[in-house]
Image (cartoon, rainbow, N blue to C red):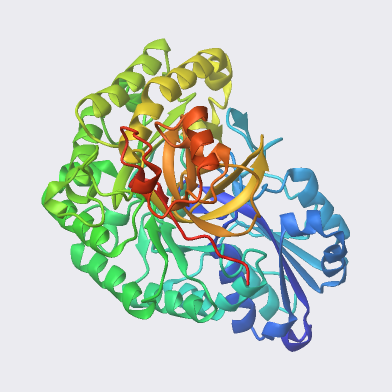
Length: 575
């Protein structure tokens, strides 16, 4: 039997994206942390556990030696919802096979990859279960498989689900692994699990395959945050649950007391945290229990950080599609939930929460505390041309009646074994591809753009934008958080830095910004002309007549309040 104290283990993170779980950088999912904790609990010393992301293996091939030489290779990954990613590229099936072929020791694969593998990580695809040439595939919880496999001396395990005591212990014991993530410490956000499973059974979703909701008590989640904080994590997202409002209850009704314990406890153990966001919130919960939901939403908005998003799984505004796919919320009910979240959490730091929702010239210059996001899914059973028009009409109504959405997520279905969509597969999605493209373009142009201007009007300040890549003479970056805005900044700036930005213009799903506050005495022509009301001629005059002692000294005569964007810093004189 293999002694755990002698084992060398390599964990490779191929990234995950599930309906209620995210792990593409800058996120780190729960899977590698739990697996590391299970290894430690089983007797493997911390210093013998190595963690790599798939991107690190791509960028630095020497690290493949750790895959080759490990006594145990653990691969974690799987995409069960389609997406486009900036911070990392999920592992493709051929790369996962290469891991298995390279490993000379025992190899174990787990995570949502157990639900199936497609030819690529994309929508309108069908999947099948594959072992991808690994010695073992965890059909239950991979962290439980890790623990049992080590306990057995690498002989095998029985597929099982872990219990609450185990996951609470492993979550804390495995926190140390974050120090090995390439983004650690400044640009890493930890996904937190409060529950798994779902009380509802939508046709396409893999979350019900975890069973009915089971909740981690508040002290166990708070303890995990405490441990992660000790290892330098300052950014957190409570994303691993189907419905944050149902946390700590019976799986459906809200429990505001549990939310208060959770959020206040996190703030107590991590008082210097920089991001506290969430993900999923079920609109049917808000409609069925409006008063308890309002209280829960107020608690969240009191403790979170601005720019937070509650993803609503409307999926379709078409009653035919709702009926055939067992969707649990109607368009009218979802609209009511949008209204309630706007009223309770659509306020901005620096104003009275009772004034929510606020936007326009007089609104404070920060993002709202918490807004809904809408998920729309196409290719479901019963979809017809009218489906697209009903979805567009729903979104237009939200805008016309003066409410805000933080983002609109339009996707095509992925079909997995075990879900009701497995028989239909991607057939409908493929038939409607051209219709889907036209409709998506229309939504981006007619709704996304004006909605984004309402959420983040010119002059809105976005603190701590992390600069990620260059394109077309611009630098692009994002804040850490749930569905952060992509910000384009004129000029090519040093990547990896974090700067404050003021919004100056809007695209469909992104904004243009300038460093905030922009110094009139040092700004480039491109930065100056990005500001509303400053054209080439005015920008040229600014540059020629520098330096200025104050903004008023520049006497620009623009109709915009330039103090929203610029300042004047004295020029440093040479000694």
